[in-house]
Amino acid sequence: MLSDRQQDTYHFIRHYIARHGRAPLLSEIAEGLGIRSKGVIHRYVQALADAGLIALQPGRHRGITLTDEQAAEPVLPLLGRIAAGQPIEAIPGQDEVNLAEFFMGPDRFLLKVQGDSMVEAGILDGDMVVIERCEQADDGDVVVALIDDEEATLKRLQDNRDGTVTLYPANSTFSPMRFAAERVAIQGRVIGQLRSYL
Amino acid sequence: MLSDRQQDTYHFIRHYIARHGRAPLLSEIAEGLGIRSKGVIHRYVQALADAGLIALQPGRHRGITLTDEQAAEPVLPLLGRIAAGQPIEAIPGQDEVNLAEFFMGPDRFLLKVQGDSMVEAGILDGDMVVIERCEQADDGDVVVALIDDEEATLKRLQDNRDGTVTLYPANSTFSPMRFAAERVAIQGRVIGQLRSYL
DNA sequence: TTTAAACGAGAACCTTTGGAGAACTTTAGA
DNA sequence: TCTAAAGTTCTCCAAAGGTTCTCGTTTAAA
Image (cartoon, rainbow over all chains, first blue to last red):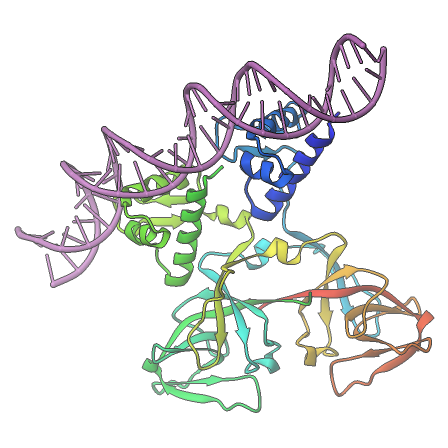
């Protein structure tokens, strides 16, 4: 059975790890609880370890680990397909999506999109796009292109096979732009996209 | 468990590789962390290799490679903002996105969208939307609504405050639909969205 | 009133962490 | 091939953090 301050300590540690991705220092716990003495904190932490709630790596800085730490797999259930006018229909053979498998991979990174040049392709201002680094891309791919080594832009690529490429925006108020191929350096292509509505 | 500076080193390496497509030099890491001694960096890099986070090709210049263990942590580097006509601009204070934090949460699930009724809101046929289960939603939220307990649909909600609600599609070829409030059961609201271009 | 448990302060001690820099070996590029 | 640049290994040091104490105060129950 934990005393009040032991519980406070435990909660503080859990919150800290959730927030920072690493364990707190004893002095940080002390500050968080409004205590001046790290020796006191050590006593509480030791009690938590004795109770089996945490594990300690003696001597180590930030050497606290949570024991009930279930490897939180980034998996969301996939309930099915939604189409206007029909009930939600299950998708046979697929009932969950692993976000890591969905998006992670070597040489990938995110960019936050600013502007409306790709709205008609469903890429809105503020969206994040997942880019996979590459120097080549196929016709029709959406790519990050560097023009004259100074301007970066997100456009749909078309190779005209005459030494020029055309970058198509997906917005009818903007015009496609045609460049000599050597002026355009492809930095990667869009392989995914995410948006938050919060 | 990594020490603070080991973590800094790891993040710097990941970020560098994402940005430059090749591993950094020890001296570049040193400069990035504000350290003068490359011997110190070597010690940190060795610790990361021992922890299995990176692999080293001894002696080689830029001989650091990331291990696939990164797939366990669904974190992608966020390089910055891309706006047509401007170089990629770093976003101060944010240099990576944790997909789990971004999307995971209690009572959330995915639906695969079929149809074009929300294209003008950037929700395309085939996209996945992250739904958070709830019975109430605010005006303007995109919700999963169940009509007469049989039809499911994804629409933007408006409460008319007269006992009826209107469900707005985001597609000018479709019409808004007005229902008695009791015919419409909200099942959840869209809080995120993902798309794969592969 | 006595007693024990919970709480807190702080000192002394030792280990870990973080950093500088020299000397060396290896790699890569002209 | 030759050399500058990069990686490796080492010693030394300082600062910060964890550990272990002693001591005092408060609170509640016996």
